[in-house]
Length: 79
Length: 79
Image (tube, rainbow over all chains, first blue to last red; front, side, top):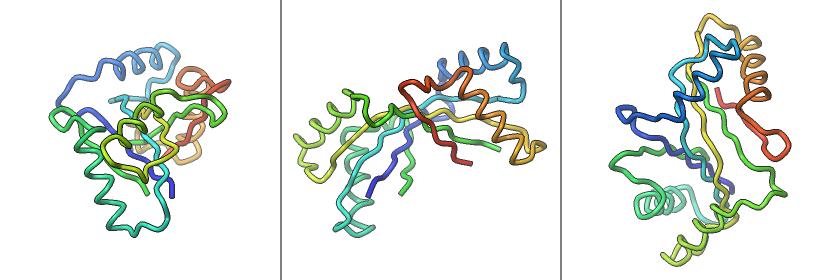
């Protein structure tokens, strides 16, 4: 099973890349796009033999130990 | 409405960052994690006044004109 981990800076942390994208889009005429933030996407294959609980636990541990800096980032897992 | 755009390198393109993450996870004991690829997440607020068709069209144009290099990347929109 392929899962997606979305990693974003916490909302109180400035994310300059998103601001640059927002300015560029506005200069191209995309006035309606606002509050743009860029983050990371990590996609991972996990064996189907794991049940949902095992999968979710493994992902959480991997995020906390390596993938996510929880001081400044938060993550969301899409199945 | 906040939408997510997931941007990833096409599968035939080498993505070294994912390989590094995979090796690091393996060295930490996460043997089951495979085929890891890293991509970009862009999150955008769009006005609720747009209907779904308008929203989807605007996002497609913005992706093609600025956000996505369609020679090497593909994108997916999550509502």
